Length: 150
Ligand code: UDP
View 1 (tube, protein in one colour):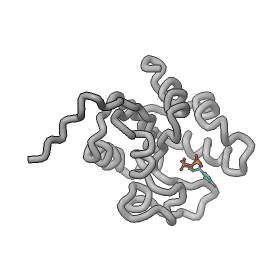
View 2: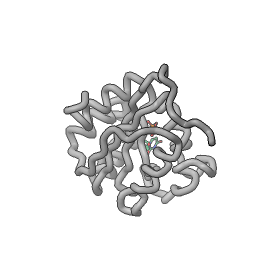
View 3: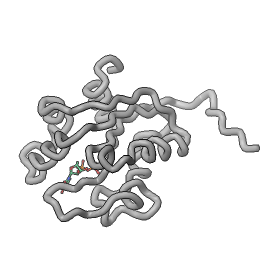
View 4: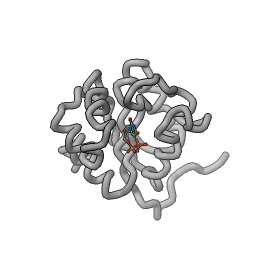
C-alpha cells in the first residue's frame, strides 16, 4: 500500500476557500469538501455564514470599480456562503487547479467549475467557488473570514 503520510519536512500552507451561494444553494458544499479532502488536503476550519457588505468589500477590494463588482457583491449576498480554511503543501495553487478557470464554460472537465458549473447568461459568473490566489491573499482572506485564526 502506498504511504500517504505527509513527509516530516512538509511546509504547511493555508488557503481560503469559499463555496459561493450558487454552490450552497445547489447542495454542492459536500462535493467541494470531498474533492479538497480527496486531494489530500486537510480541513482546518469550516463556517457557514451570511456574508456582509463590509466583509465582501474587504474581500473583493482589488475588484472595486470593475463592471462586475456590484453584481458580484450582490450575488455573494444572495445566500449562505461556506468558508473553509484548507491546509497542505501547495494548497494555494493546488485548489486553484481543482477549481478550474474563472469562466465555467472554459473550465476543463475534471475541475469543480468544469464538472459542476455552467454559464447562466448573467452579468456575474456564478462559478461555485473562490480560492486564494497567493500566500499574501490567503493570509489576508483567512484573517477576514476567520478573525480568530488570523
Ligand atoms: N467575475 C465575473 N466576471 C468577470 C471576472 C470575474 O463575474 O469578468 C467574478 C467571478 O465570480 C470570479 C470573481 O469575480 O470568481 C473574482 O474574479 P477573479 O478574477 O479573482 O477570478 P477567480 O480568482 O475567482 O477565478
